[in-house]
Image 1 (tube, rainbow, N blue to C red):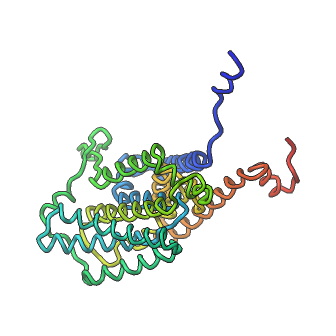
Image 2: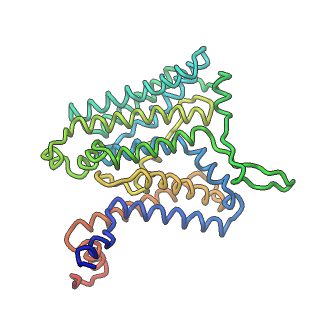
Image 3: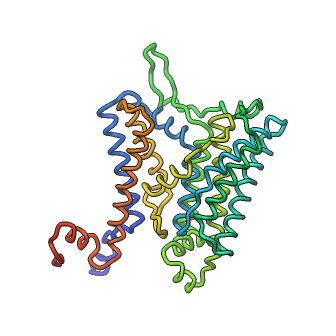
Length: 359
């Protein structure tokens, strides 16, 4: 066998995106298996995983939207407000005699409108994305209270049927104490979320636009020199984000069945945290949707472990989430150091006071 063939068969080193994603997936499985070993109970059943997905389908979608924007070097903190506005608008529309189809179009239209306006302001007027989306968040929250001050439940029969529809998987169920088989149940919103994860993964990995997002976040000047229309790419990133936020709002309504001005409070922070835990860099250019998905699952697992540990006060979840986020930000700084001279080896040597490493 020739030397060239041997070199071709050697395993290429992991990219920053692959490394961070792999670490996130490993941490998730270690945490979940540890929870199974220590607490058992619901963690031993597949329904626990499906419940995590059912409760976080909207978060998975909106985390995908944040990942797209963050890979492109931007940020979008308006998504929680957009979800609240979509939910309240659709509830009022359905209770006023609207159909499911027009409610879905309304949700999509609100998301597209926010994404287009914010994308235009960020890309073509070159206003800082944090400022633009902060204004969008306040505007969406304010519009939510204008649509309806009082919380409302959906009274539409067709929507109730859709909301109560569950996909049953008998072979992943469990046997109750009375001997009855209880199948695992998954909501329709989970299927929507998983389809979006798959579509976004294909878009980022297999299309020219996806490569443009990575190039823009990695180095916008170099991307411009390569002939990439950076303004249009940045605009499309925010357009995707707004559109996915609109879809997430409809999925959120399918899970809760009610509209409230405080719906999805903190969703943008949870989405950003999930993206970072999944390996997306705040500086852009690095990230993967699969990692983001496991970032959501890791964040949810942490909260579940905190709850079953007896720490039911809400601040314990915030403390553990903050600690986990700090850990992953530190991890990202280590990965970034690989781009410099000496990589991780040099950084560790400096921490340990060993001087410049040999070899």
